Image (tube, rainbow, N blue to C red; front, side, top):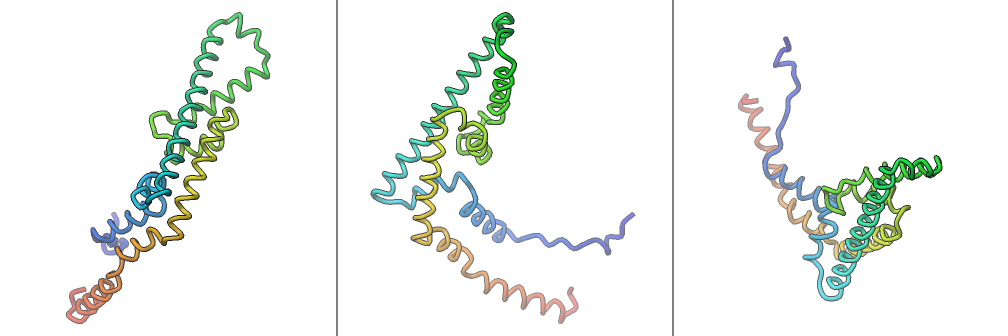
Length: 187
């Protein structure tokens, strides 16, 4: 049986700190935020260009994935015909199997721009379909333009500074509170 006094102390973050951490994580890391929420900060030609880039990469991904799905259905029908499938050379069967495994890595229940789906398209599927290659190029282009704009205007960094601007004052209040606890034997 463990001694509760010897166990490590766990300090829970306050609600505001948890919210700040989530905002910071989303603002700098969340893929969905990168390509959609930043539209709210665009104006004029930027909004027009980014809207078209967003539409273009989604169309390329949608069409490319549909073509691969159609191919998969066609191959499945061919495999069902035992006589026809026997005539397919072994190296081609192995190639077909590799392609099917690559396609299975894509999660059709998640959006195109899900982090793992983008990785599967980039690393495993683009080699099979030119529409997916184009989609990756346009996707990367839109992300680059959005990130460039954010860097130019200091984007979320301003928001981060605003959210955390009174952080030093809160840290000082916590420090004063800890000193009082020690002084009065409360800790």
